[in-house]
Length: 213
Image (cartoon, one colour):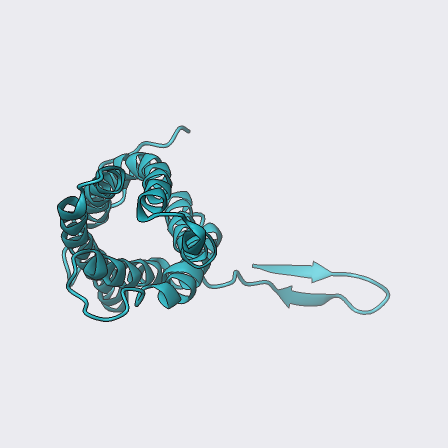
């Protein structure tokens, strides 16, 4: 639109244009979540033959900081679901990394450390439960991410609170890898669908959520 500014000098016409919208940060947030989840879950499934802490640096850098930044940009997009989900799990990975570095080494036994982990995951399981329900209003692909994550977290809570839960934790690792695959697929769909301006990869239709007038 245009507006006229007056004053002692001759009136001037100033053109005011709206800023272009930012790019969708969701594919980046999903990718950060997927990679860190994949590394930790592969370790839980005993597929990795390394240190077992391959996930730790990425909990701070990619799954943590980058996903948190994606959540902040979702606030700019006025996407309350994306902002809540990405910021929550960005904080989860940073917090888990800090716990592993600062708290876990002082645990008197593995059982005590596992008890901590059970309570930590339970807290995020509660959050994930309502995010799972509201993801139905986003897309079927996003719902699958939160559904597989829900099952993974349930198994992690049970496995960490069970003295003989090694096999349950391995199963949680396998489900976590499936969760990562679902998140990677949804991220890839967000990238290519946004580039093409049409649905190249299927994500499914959301349920309709009516807004009050």
